Structure formats: C-alpha cells, structure tokens
Length: 639
Ligand code: ACM
Picture 1 (cartoon, rainbow, N blue to C red):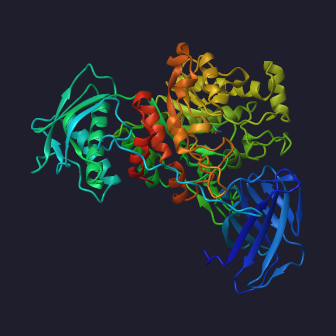
Picture 2 (picture 1 turned 90 degrees about the vertical axis):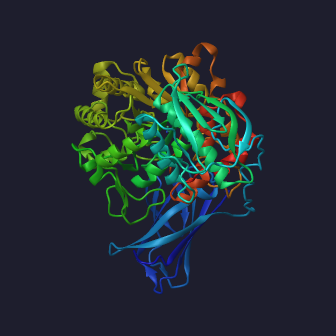
Picture 3 (picture 1 turned 60 degrees about the vertical axis):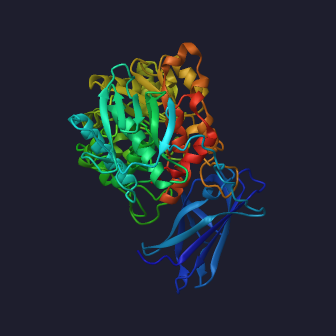
C-alpha cells in the first residue's frame, strides 16, 4: 500500500437540523494535484436520504459506507485542502468515535489512495477528557484473586513459593490439569516464573489433590499450611478453578510484592454463583486472527468465565469455513473497494477480513475445553445477513423491490427470506456442519434486529403469509425460527438466541435460552414466557458502550453510558421475582466491535469491565466489594 499522504479531518457541531452538521476537510500531501476523484468514508453517524451538502454531492450510502464527489472540476493542489459540509444526519454525534473511522480516495482510473483519518472534533465547545475510570481502590487482605472467591478465611501469609508442585502419587487427571493451568499462566505472563511444576522444586510447596464429592460442580476447597496446599474438588472443572486461584495468588505475589502475598494458613472454599458466565465476541465487524481469539479465551479463563459466545456472522462478514458453501468465505468474508461487500467500520479500500478454518476451530475448541470454556457459535439469522446474501444472491426473492426495508444499521434487504425453499436448504446444511463441528449444547442463531417491515414487499413472502395465516414480519420470523428450532432439536442441540426470538409467537421455550439485551426488564418477560434467560443488558454488560459522558471517551452510546462501577454493581438477579429465579442461568458480557477496530480501543473498552462482569457472574452480592475490585482489576491481562 502506498504511504498515506492524504488526511481527512472531521468536525461536528449542532445545527438547525436534528442530527447536526459534519464538516469534512481532505488535505493533500501527495506532492501532486488531486483531481477526478471521489471520497469514501465509513461512519456510524450516517447521512440520510434527505440531506443537504455544501461543496459536495453524496453519491451513495450503504450502511456506514458513504461516497462523496467534489464539485465538477475540483482540483486540490499539494498542500491544499477541500472542505465540505453535510446536514441530515441520522443522529447527533456524542463522542470522538462517532465520525469517519476510515476513508480512501477513489480515482476515475479505478485506482484508490489511502487516507489517514483524524478523530471527530467537537466544533464550538471544549471537548473535555474523561475522568479516571477506577478509583485507587482498597485491599483488606494482601491477596490477588479476581473474581473474588465466595469463602476466604486466610489467617497468615508469606512470600510466593518458588513453585507449587504435584505431591507424590498425584493422578493423571490432576497432573494434566496442572499442566494446562501452568501453560495458561505462562502464556498470559511470560515475563514471570511458571507457578507450577510436575516435579518437586526446591523452595516450592507440594499440592495434595483430593476428591470431595460434597463440593458443588465447579467448586473447590484449598487449605494452606506450612507444609503445602491441600486441594479438593468433585469435578475436573473445580480442580482447574482451584489451580487458577493458586496461579492468581502466586501471580499477585510475584507481580507486586509490596501489596500481595501467598496464604500460609487458612482455607478458600469457593463455588460460582451462576452456571453461565459468558463473554461474546463479534468477529464480523472486526476480524480477529485466530491467535487473538485464543488469547482472548485465555483471558476469559483467567477471569473464570466458562462460555465463549462466538459471533461468527453479521452483515459485515461471514467468518466460518462451510464446506458446502465456499462462497460464504470467498465472497462474504472480505470487504473492500473492489469487493462485493463495501468497506465499513475502520476498513478502507484494501481488502479486509478473514475467516476461521474448521481445523483452526477444532484446535480452539480443544484449547477452550482445557480451560473449562465451552464455545457457543452464533450464526446470526434471519437478519444481519448482508454478507450471506452477497455471497449467495439466489437466496433473495428476485421480485422484491431493492431497498424495500432497512435494518437499524442501515443495511437494505438484509434478512433471509422465510418464503424461499433454498433458505431452509441453506440453514439445514450450515447448521448441520456447525452442529458437527462444535460440541456445545447450544447453537446461537441470533434472531435480533429484523427490521419491522422486512419481506412485506416480497411476493413470495406474501404468498406464504396467506397460505399459513402468518401476521407481518414477526409472524414470518417465528415461522422461520420454528423450523430452525426443529433442525437443531433433530441434531441434539438446544437453541440460543437474542431476545427478539420471542417475537411473533416465538419458538418452543423447551430447550431454548434467550439473551436479554435490549433492556433488563426483557429478562423477566422472557422467563415468564418459559424461556431460560442469560442477562446481557446493553445498559450494564455491552462493553462497546462509552464509560463516561465526555466527548473524548470512545465507544457507542445508544444504550447509555456504562461506567465500570455500573457493570460491577449491576445485579441481574435483582430483576427477577423469586418464582422465576430458576430461569436465570447467568450473565454475559457482549463485545460488539463496530468501534473496536484496533487493540488500543479494544483494551480500553473491554477492560476492566470484562472482569466486572466476571465477578458479577462468580461472586455472590455479599462478597462483592467495589474498592477491592478497583485495586485488583488493573493487574488483569489485556489482549
Ligand atoms: C444486539 O445487540 N443486536 C443483540
């Protein structure tokens, strides 16, 4: 790629029109005059059909992708700039990440030039920086453990032992668990000595592994004495969590000797609050290479989370190898100037994307299983299917008017049509391959954000509605999802989905787990309808939301401002009446990546809120303590 010698600055200010005004300035440092070109950029704040532009003309908008032409005859000499303004935006900008994220110049000869994009500048008012996200914090005990265990009675501490090692006669299962958690610790903290050893170590302490059938699943007990550590559990998962606790204690005592030590006497007896302690990751909007995903799984394990919800498809890209449909990844995994999918969300003219091969997925499943993490794959249907429909255009009703409906993200006609027979062949085949590949109990099928009005201009859908007596978009959606439920049941899989799966009559709640994301009250409503529920409310657990009101704070804001303390103190159970409490399976963080297009942004938004959700999932209310969390969280690993 040529060195980028063009720069786009964007400013936003309030105006008479509701969404305010953008001012764009394209500066030329190429050493030559720039002419006969258009400017393309991607911005979550979108220009609507009804808009006004000064000194430019809007040529096209596809979701976040915008293309503008300068007035005919425009030439930008080297060192000069072209400025234009736009009003008619879909909403006011609130934060620096609300403007253009990527841009390029397209020339009349078909070539493109890269453009560097500045942050969105607030015009006419001072942009204040956000306050620190965590207070200094306070420790009552010199112990590093996060999530905090549910029973801690430690009476004495000492410096970290050189290592903890397997007592003589330790069985294979315990030795293998120790190997897995030692390897986890080494991957996360390669600069520190390995906490565990299979063989005795001078200056170390032995771990005596035992079984106690009275301990709960995933629970454990660790007793500390002068001569070593006694570890008990009733399951392999419990043994692994005990080892993670021990590894964390040693990590703290090595990483910050002034503040942390290792227990010399006392007991930790612990079990998690919820069985479903999840984190989702959207790899469609932004593609994370498999090594990043593996590291993310390590981080989940270190936080004692046990579900990785892998959001593998969306409008912006399909990310999983499917043998029967190579087009999905040949066409649907790439965005770019000359690609079927236009650039979006931080990607520009150069082809951007990627996908995971089945072999990579198998290795990742084994990696996660060694850390007691189940991978729940998500294929988001019937909405969010632009990438699918670009790859397999025959899945659309050719008689349906183009642009007959738009998703909330601005994608036209992006939902799989319930009235097309091939839709079901596609779903049978894809879900069949996924069910074979992933050993998880659940397959997540999305079900979110089908735009009201979808398919109503499709003659085939109208015919189906008349034949089956279906009402509107959500009657059609429920018809399609009912068939998907049958496909999953036939393969021994349970269905998971977002809360809108319940719309239009929903699906059989038996063996269906839905995620309440739009607002906390939806969780109770779903439980009343008989669904199992995982709480993922955007207002507390969407880690792409801004953490402060300040303009300079990055992130999305449609669900409000989500400070770390709110993610930490939010009590999902507080929403549920006692008679429905059994329907609440747990909690989950969601990481949507429209705004997280580099590691810096990812780390700033995801951490330490991920650990806040992890502690909410593991630690009972009475054992949570915000000052302790604030003291410990900065030592947790980043991506
Ligand atoms: C969602 O945030 N659309 C589930």
